[in-house]
Image (cartoon, rainbow, N blue to C red):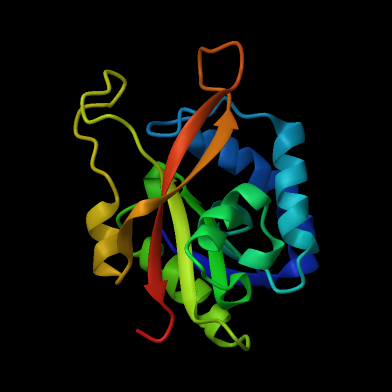
Length: 198
């Protein structure tokens, strides 16, 4: 299968937002996020990224169908819960470009698209003035979580191979409703950082 990469900045992504909302819900429903998606929330979340003039959406398309997406946004345009750990560690928000997520349908994994997502986002951040760091966070689950599927592998080795360092003292908390639950709950996410010029 031939997949092409399309990079959109800010408002240019708007025609794709409904499809991206559905894609996020589908992919994040799986372990480890177990997210019981909500279209109204997704539209608000993606709208905030689209409104940022320096945000980036890296789309993977099979024909006209979006099969994957990776996002990034200046940390100064993110929500306070994402910013706070950086403030606590004395980092300048204006020097950090934050990666929101990478989502990809299972049939398209293992073809190098994860690297292409990171390459495109890092290239976008380098083209903007003043950024010294790229960063993201990821949910953490207990090693013995009974919901972990057989054969599950975390992305830690992939991220480490990209030069990102797991932070032992930088976390944030985000709320979402898990599949099978009736109300939202809090989840701890760990940050990973990389110097942009590394």
